[in-house]
Length: 124
Image 1: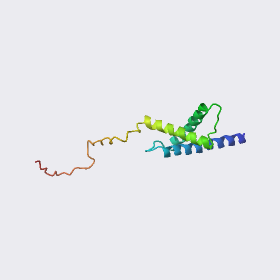
Image 2: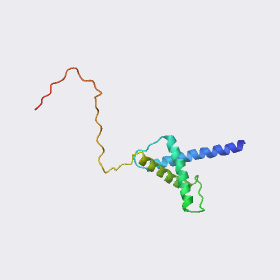
Image 3: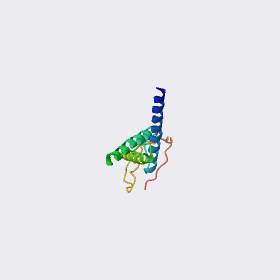
């Protein structure tokens, strides 16, 4: 029982480390500011591994790739990149940078205190 627990713990820790690395690498490749914290990066890396290795197995029938290999790392990073792209697309962060930025919103009130005495304004 203890041996089986060690195997599962080792496998889970390997997937966590692998998912974090692939998620970080995909975030490094993607231009712009990336959403999500460490848990989102980990989930993106593991999901990218499933998507990338599954797509590779689907395209090349009979070809099985281990996610914990160099080929697996490349396709997992590609899968995480796709997940990150769609996440940014659905959250509205993908914008056309050839357009000028939108105007800033004006405040309805000022956070500064106004002086008790108003200065006269010259109107011409």
